[in-house]
Image (cartoon, rainbow, N blue to C red; front, side):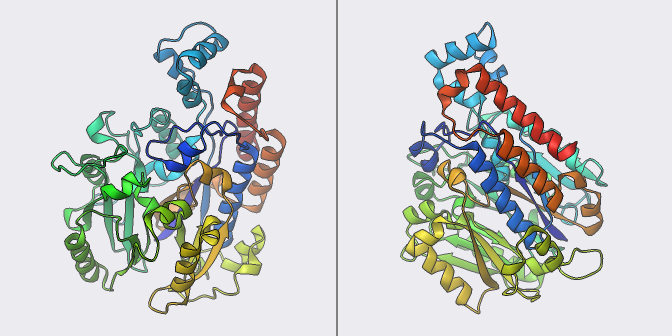
Length: 467
């Protein structure tokens, strides 16, 4: 099993609308000027770094914006200009919503159940309905089409419809899902994290819990996961109130490593102990569970640094022969070879890809340094990446990607047009630099020339990659 990544390219309408429910960064940057060009280039560079580590890296293209059907369904009538002017006066958040580029955070796009884990041997995708945030609810149909386009030729790939659009089944995708496995990737357990359950009295006090227990149960069933390999944890209400709107802002995992804050989960010690015991019997090796205390990384600084939204990768998983691309050849092709000498080919070595804010916040930087120096875990190196535009809207490296574990023969069947290569990177970077706006605020959307610019940039980006 090989873990591929799919990153979503930031769209040309990227702006700071402050629409993210419980997202402190999004709300604090509302109405400030954005740079779609800078955002897209930062995200593309992050994908380039991951590809340079040898990880199979693919891309989602931006869907078209604006989605004016949102305004029509809200009762605004007339021409496009008239609808937008009416909405700007009466419901300005609706204007921001129909131009939203929140699809850039691919971790919310769907939940994945690999063919090696499902009882029917199929590769299952369930697009997230995203109904907690009204500017994202129409993404489900768009990402369903994208998944069908990218994985349509993969044998036994099954792209489901999103869960029903009802509040008890509100779904925020793989940002609330972790897959733990042995080194081969064949023996895995699945952990779903929810913020609310109908049978529980535990509720966050400050923000809405975006993801429910019942949603997680439905996702596990659609993914044909067995009861004994599936775990459900309750997100700590104190974390949600602090701005942890998804589990991937307070916990991260890869293979046999689980890193989480001590306030990530509510009364979960017994379930975590059961998870550890089950992992040993199921995967044949201990689970490396690293709990980060409040004293080491206070909740406020965990949210500010987005340490837990780092990507944890195994570069050497993809090195060598047998149909796999050689690590150093791939790295050299995308210009990251100079950083790979430290990693070697140790099958247990892992690399953290962290947001630049982790360097600036002492507690996060010191935590990372201790993790790398500790021989008791497989983390051996760190890459810091600048994602200022995404971070200002509340999304770090892990928010920008969806992980898909694939067999080698499945990976070979994925549409190669969407894979990051030196050629595709050059074409996309050129299109972004040529067509994306340098600066954008929501009031610009009332300008017809701006809307034409956004549509043209979206079309040209798709043509640059697909011809």
